[in-house]
Image 1 (cartoon, rainbow, N blue to C red):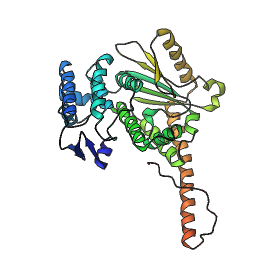
Image 2: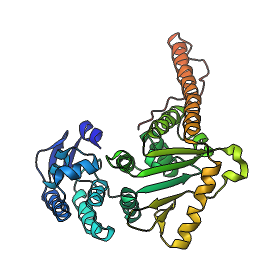
Image 3: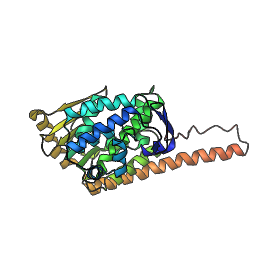
Image 4: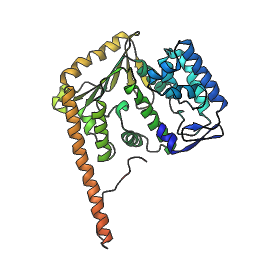
Length: 338
């Protein structure tokens, strides 16, 4: 988000925005800021306290409330969650945010965040503990931008650049919940297959595995790799997310690749998924083994990416010597960030 602000000039409600400062605030964002300020004041929370809970600088909260900073849907949901607002009370504010966003550049627009994603952001921001299992791909909360781009492009090859930039930015913004001052607890069970499934090029996978190792070093994050060597014991079904709350009963979120998602809070359904957690814990590598496994695999991908670079450099040297007719090696250098 902040990098996008530094890198580009966008237009908000017909007024130019440069860098991190807004020259002219729009009426919609001023009104939205007032709505947010009333939410905070009703909760009896000071701006400094809210910024501490969110891990934001105090000026960010102040600028949002004064309408001097266009607020994204992700910003608004996380702001409201930290004020203790219920899901039903958030929706009108989210609807107003999307209306305000309709007049500005795509770097700030979250119009592709549908109701399902809004619900997921709300619940994952307020969960005391999240247990996430992924058998095929690395979970979005620990994805790098390069990995996300490659994965989304493969699933939606006709996706335009504007929407792609927004999807990646929204996913990166969601990851802030991992590093809040008082964060929830996250346990990621990742099947070995997801780590070995090549998304993008070797360099993308190298960076992704390193990011996974570094994220697993956080005090509130646990990485547990489910090894393929466990055979049939490692086959526990599809991806799921079990979220537990301090004041509410637990719930399960199931992602639907066709669009949307399914939330289950019936105790019977939730119990079935809770019963899978001990099975995963029993078969998975421990935290130290998991980080070591991911680091070793990152080295494997690094050697592969270095090989690609070496091939390309060798080919360029041959061409400079006039060997234009030499058969190309077939290796193409593809930028990670497009």
